[in-house]
Every structure is written in C-alpha cells, then in structure tokens.
Length: 436
Image (cartoon, rainbow, N blue to C red; front, side):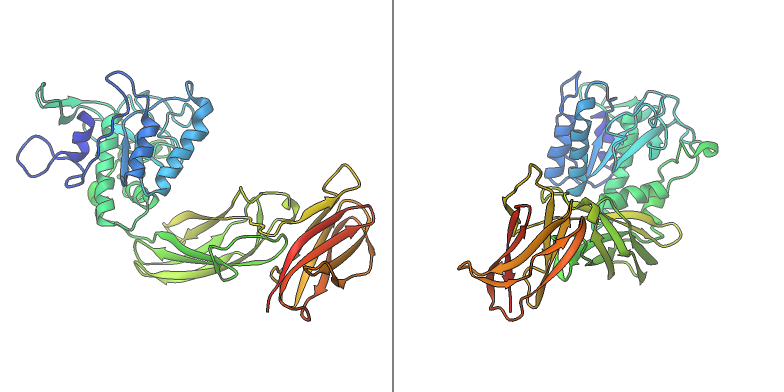
C-alpha cells in the first residue's frame, strides 16, 4: 500500500497525495507474506504475461543466497522485457556501490534501476546504493504516501522502495503517451532527461534525478525499432550454409523524434560482415526505412551453433549526436536436409565435413569439402531409383576447403541424393532438390 500510492494514488480529488502515474491502471501481485518476499521473479513473469507495461520491484537482494539461479532470473527479466514490460527496481538501501556489490534485480540488464535522493530532492539520500548500474534517482527520504486503512490512511516512509514507484509512475505516463515505444525507449527517455543535481561532481556514479515534465516533453532525438527483416528475400529467413554471403534487409521504424540515422551491423561471434553500414537518412516520427547488410557465417565455426542455438546479430544505430542504441535480431541455423554419414573407416567423424548450396538448385550446386587430412574424393548425384545421373572423377584433395560444382540444369525437377565418397572409406549422403 505504501509503495503503490506513490505511483497510483488518485489526483485532483483534494485528498491525500497525487500519484506520479495518475490515471494509470495498476495490478497488485502478491509475492510473499508480511515478513518474506519469496516469489518476486514469479511475480515479474506473471505481470508480464498479463500485459503489464511497467513492473515496479521495490525490493533488492544480493547474490549470496541465489547465485546459482542468477542466469535463470536474468532470463526471466529478458523474457518480460521482450513481452513489452519495463521493469523498474529499487537500487537498494545499503550505502554501497552496486557496481562492486550488486543488488538484484536492479543491476540486471534492461532493468531501470532507481536510487534515492534526500527530502530536499537535490542530493543523494545517505542510505541509497549508487554506481554506474544505478540509472536514475528519485525521492527516498520521508516520502508522504498512502497507508493501511486501520492506521492513519497516510504516512511517511523512506527508502528506494519509494523511489522506484515514483519513477515507475512516470514510466507509466510515458507508456500511455507513446504506446508504440519499447521498454528500452521509455527507460532511455527517463534517463536522458534527468536533472544533474544528485551529485554533479560525480555524475559517473550519481547520474541524475528524474524530471517527469522533461521526460514527457523533451523527446529530441530518434529511437529505432526493428519491425521486419528478410534474408535473401525470405522474411525472417534462416542460415543454412557456411561461407556464403547472405543479403539481410532490415526495416527500422523511428518511434521518437525526427533525425538523420545511420545503422551499422557489428561483427559477431558467429558471423563476419562485408557490408556493414546503412545510411537511412532523415527519418520522421513513425517513418520506416529499410537498410541492407551483407554478411557470412564464420567458416571457422562450421560445427556450431546447431539449429537449437540462434545467431544473434547486433546493430548500432546513431544520429551522430545524442542518439546511440543497440538493436538485435536472431537468425536460426536450419538444415532441413541433413548430411548423413553412412560409413566411416576411422574413429573420428570430422575427417570430412560437407556442405552444398544452393539447395534447391536449378542450374548448379556447389559441394564444399572440408578435409582434416589428404584424401581422394568422388562426388555424384543419384535419382530416387538409385541411378547415378551426375558424377565427378575421383580426385585427391589436400587438407582444407575445396569446392566441387555439379551441373544440374539438364536434370528433371525432383529429389536427388548427393553422395560424397572418400578412398578412406567414408560415405556421406544428402538430399538435393532440383527445381525448375
């Protein structure tokens, strides 16, 4: 009740207090009892699945009791944010640096962490946690708020437990005013419009105090969201081949203020970029523009990721001034027509690794051989009756990568078997679709 009043108390009724998130609906969720909070992360998940746009967590814990679950809890935070919920959390009341002694959930990525200011609202509250991981500050000392009906109905309380809902209410108004904004954009708007009054000489650790009016009236630079993407003209496409250049078209929508935007596809763990930059030019609010990028999977990591592990592509967007943001999409490695090792003469199964593209093919298909050691290889195509229709002569290849091209333009459309046989005794087979 104390916490909720800060954000949700009615306004303009001549009574008590005014919540910072006036006219926003709120959803109370029980996550514990009178003494213990033991289902906080369950509550976050529940709220996100119910469509909550802002989730306020007026609690903080260090990692001592649940360090083995941190990755799991982090995934709950990420999932809730992906569902459209901004999580606003108390930084903690321990007078410590959260960069060194982290308190959760405030320090998780994508959480808006809120520290506290004194009653005069222009200095840090002595008990607040601080640090780079504390994003903003709001009143925490002697906050006047609602209380239980059997007490005085109103009371004063202190702590970042109250800084968080005061900030969460502002976030709620922003979500109402800008319904298309992502959680990240709402958080960013609150951060960049803060007043530098908490500790002006050390803004690195004490960023600034929330200013609701500025947050609602000063969106001064762009903010992008990825709406659609395609790979080689296939919407939401997948990656099947190694060492093949993929053309990636990504459509960006500007949700905030007009500006001239450039987007760069950053090199990642499983891919290398050959065309990285897309200049989108001037984008008005709600405008959409498409950028083109070219990349290929890293040939040194051909054995992973599997189709269960997506590749994350990172984009850096900037207007060259204030707006700087990182966006991401996921592309899956899918092999619908797998290579099957039918016989192996040695104990290792990576002496010969085979790929081919395109598949389906209309004119030709390229078979890539990756050999650990020198071997003699013969490649052929067989129809569904097992008849050999295309074949190469046996040839000795050294260790490394080699490309063999098979001409299929004279073959009827249909399903064929691509057979790769080595003198060392390995036979690898994959289905090939010939299309017309």
